[in-house]
Length: 322
Image 1 (cartoon, rainbow, N blue to C red):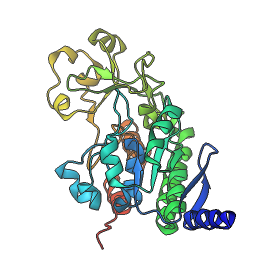
Image 2 (cartoon, rainbow, N blue to C red):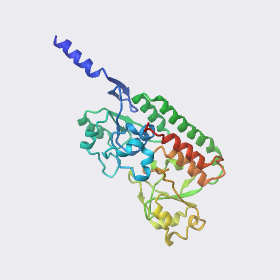
Image 3 (cartoon, rainbow, N blue to C red):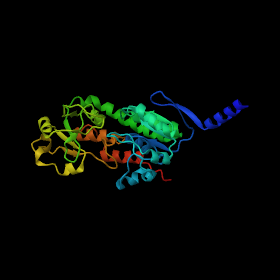
């Protein structure tokens, strides 16, 4: 009789559950119906946002008022933080109160096993997700379709992602015919922080045909390496790609001898409604690659960047208020 009772309880507990294999080969039992997702880092939160803002259970950081019109119901979600460098960790009380059905973690994070163990106290299934390149957006959207059953939305986003990646691939042979433009990626309000070639923050540049003017190595995954003025002057880049509007509007005389400044080849990375390149590295990079190619080699892309931006925003910031 006890065995029958045990089986009844076991089957009842698992009646509304299913097993999936995550990107790192782990079998994870998840609820059959997923309505709330917490992603432990901003890039994954952003891809969930693109898929369906109403799925987000809690945020890593708040959105600003300019982004409000683009994030739907996610704007009012609680801020739980997350694991995204410089000692950042989630607020477990806020996270538990938001009651996500599943937690998404980038499987390539340093110390990911320890992170999974920390989440185990919440008794919420943890799914490890690939997020090492822009191409991983495809498997992320496929995962969200499996979790929610919304294959139509996933197919829309996957089609655009593959179309963009295919376009970039088709341009590589032509890009190699041109001497690579040497760029400096200026981060920080003084422009003295940047990324080295081994930084994943530079991935959009890899497809642009341009070359980093810096010769350096990253000291951490976080990026934003401190760069001396002397190093930048010696590198003498052809182009400045600038992250901060404050630096873009007030580049001081210390940089005046550089070819990029003398030739007025200084460009501010678009950030409407989110940055095209990084901070966080997100699906916006699909537009960022196009923008970089237009910037470095304007004759290679015949399509209008403004028209593409409109098409992109209509797809990725679909209104879920209905």
